Image (cartoon, rainbow, N blue to C red; front, side, top):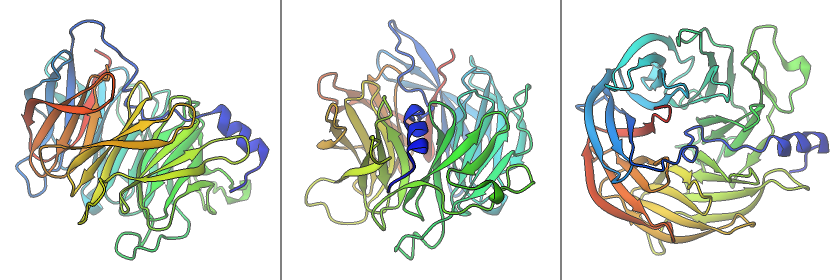
Length: 402
């Protein structure tokens, strides 16, 4: 997929080191305790909303602090870099919302500031721009993304952008009957938004205006932009395109932005894209997340790069495991080296601790969070024996500000 050299140069200069979780930003040199928030599904479960834990960096152990906030189906949670506020999407079909809270770092308690309509159905991801002035959400069922400003008091203001993903649908009639935005993050330079759309088999790239909070498809002409703030009638946006039926869900990047790793939920694969001087995001490898000989239903869920850039991890639901990949230095390609059972069912999400010492896997259907020690030489995982109980966990985030 050739693109103009001018656009290519901009993309390379704004190499996307996304994943605003900042997993590798803080590396505690001494024993430390982090506040952790866990998002859950509340429908048809005993969960009440968002739960708080204390995390020990030496042992990887989680100690419960109780319910942080009662709120419906907070399927993805994000803590603001200043540590004062937290934000969550409420994945509740046509009543879906995005919520803003104040955060008490000592108790882990959240106090609702305000809640706005998500402008779409079933939001499943939330992130910040690099200035911390906007939140971006992906609405799965409606296949659109939206941007909301963060006001000085932490509340969410009226949206500055809402944009529906467009393009050719994938061939899976059950899963790809329409666009399904599943993940959105900003590039390191804060100039581009990347959107994984499961229905379109694409990672779409939109231009982001960090002053206005607007989104515009990268190849859109000025005539496509409406006078309404943030409203666009998009053509097919520039994208990285995956094999038909892959169903991209989440994305990870190499630390230098030269490689993009796209997790395919439907086909249980990771597709590696290289950003080079001739083509932007050229597919160089597709590799299964499953062990040889596996048969049966499987849906991948989460993908993350270790802070040292040597290992990549992906979760399997069905096989109920974490796939461990070696990353070949310089080439960015992957080699599956282990497939580790998570000790539960349906690991929808996992998180690597800030020091890169432990991986915490959330087993949605087992109501557990299982801690694994990451081997410093190989990246392989060994369970520590620590298992935290929480109803239907589906997202875990560290408070890195305290």
